[in-house]
Image (tube, rainbow, N blue to C red; front, side, top):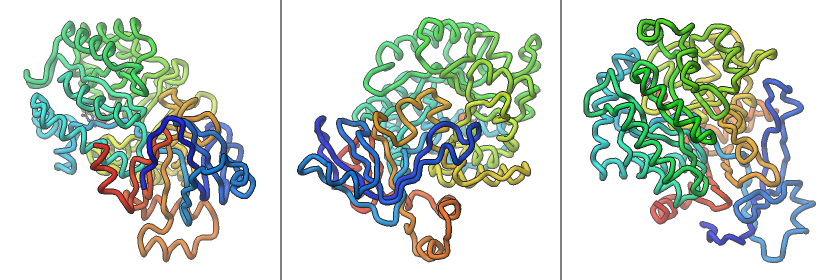
Length: 452
Ligand code: GUN
Ligand code: FE
């Protein structure tokens, strides 16, 4: 049942626990993997208070502390989706066309519907409900050009006490007039949204130029100015997703060295800047991402659906200049809400790149890697004392097939492989946000309805 959201509440979760310290791509898996069978995770005032073997910790719990038992499950940090468009839910699974055709044919028409506040609120509610059902506790979210698309999302996220990053899309050209702002109005609307939302509770604002082709140099300049004025905000956009897009950027910005350089020239690279895709990057661009501490969101289901290409994780994580990388669903070009499905597709993309991705590395990308990409890894993405208590409980026997398959598993690595191969939202038994259970699969409907 749902835990009362009292500030001083203490509650413990008991079960097998898996978390990461550091970056396994850089420091090696052995140094980073923290796996504890029959662990106790004590939550207090929205944070993780203690983690350790249940047999040691349970006798020390304050009297009356409730303990939730999760047999044959893995307690992990909540998933972090580093790139998603909530307004695109109504076009999920629309035909997979090349990016620029897909934008024109499906995306821009769908985003115009967000002039309607009822539709906006309904989609924001659906989006956050699905996040909870999928164990996603944080995300970096594109709204539409309409400021109310940010208000609607943040209003609900604030009620859930969710650590969410979002922003109003900036675009002042190469889109239908109904979706265009101007350099000035985009700046003004974004500044007002920053004042209203950034730093309220766990919310963070992202300055969100859609991608270089849909912003004039004046608008990119204004976005850079805004970030300089509010340096603790985030920046999010798209980068090097599709070859036709890249050729177009070269035409539109002939003075730039490459695609990344367009954003660089306007002061849009740095910590808390995250760019989706980055599939077709040259060595200079990886190096510049590393040097500027700019992150990439790898969105495999989207890249396969739109035929954009195969992200080169090995190149991105090269030891001499590792780039921060998280996983993104990129709905609605992405095809699944599930970070398990996204991990699985990342594994297949890696295979096609001749560089297999271990299941543990995939889980890292979906949790702490995403937090690291957003420069939030001091607060979320792992299970350790002092971290915010955002957790997902993953049922290893969620379906009859999984239960049968798990009987033949002889290592943690293989269990994770089965989890990400066969798993989806059915696996997520519970989702905890800031120490409060916000989704309970087996008592799900009433909980979700009450909150949202
Ligand atoms: N590039 C510019 N806009 C978009 C978008 O909405 N989705 C994706 N996948 N790429 C983009
Ligand atoms: Fe996207």
